[in-house]
Image (tube, rainbow over all chains, first blue to last red; front, side, top):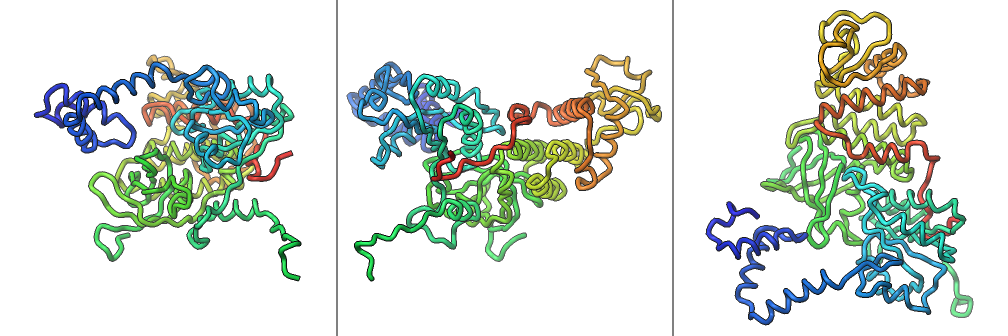
Length: 213
Length: 268
């Protein structure tokens, strides 16, 4: 937001509005609302917020192995001896690690690419943490690489690119299953989702002890 | 195109670019036949289970119901007409699809009808899904796009003096917009690209033919390189800057075909 859009705001207020409006998903109106909320906030709360922001910038680093966001040189997942070191799950963003950890279904390691290949935005493979991934695959005893990029065109492009690079290394490459989401109606599914669901269909296992004879 | 309800219209569109918006929304750049490039939001499209999400991925050819807005439109319904599955599941085809999509977006203007560009893009994505000669398609597309938008390079006569060109090797100037005869090439300080007689013949053939007629054209390696340089310099000059997706296309151009990694199935 420039000074033209807030002609009557005092300079410190205009500065804060401008800072908020740079945040993702925050438009000019929301930036103004947040600023005036801060003005009315008790001083100690404002100081705590400012300190939290500075602390994040000062203390947070990228894990030297998986490149996830962490406070230590190596993150808690990478230092955990009980994690399965033969599997690495490749994700686009640090938030994807949190989502996968919430499932409690995966016990391997991660690698965060910090983005996906997006040719129309000029983002190529060299801007992602792909070289670091290849270094890890040469050093570590990894037998399976799980590609967990987003199920959209850029995520698919990134996966296909990685598959091409990694397949010659003799490491098994797998991809998260794609298809219908839980609770969705079949009639609303698009053709790509349905085609993926058909391709990835699995045989229904019949439990012999509980099935009726 | 207008439906019965006020401020609501339906249109066909190809999704050319997108960015994240807010918590789970998506902002889309769409090429439409009647309104050229428009920007529209798709609420909740990034959430799993979204009714819109699967229809509005990049390069999807869709039918949309759109609520008209002052700055941004809002998508209320989407149906896929063709997702060009073969294009999006092969890295080589995909890189070329994104390249022609970006070119189409760069020459189109917001809210200005572009039915010919739209039809050219849809047809070309359809051909890209099946052709064995994807590079020729990209070159043909670039030339046809320049032609229908009024920027066709001069390939028949010297672009400076207008004299007919002898059947010989010549040079191409993007700045002047075409081939130059031997006496005009030395005037001016613009970059000149070599154009052999073979290159000129192929360019003329591409310019006057539909894609099926040139699909199986066997173009020599040197001619391919010259045509690539000529068409890129010409399109870059017309749109005012380089095409961002060309770098990725160049990187994967000669890779062997790579299909998708099967979801949930081990690829060993």
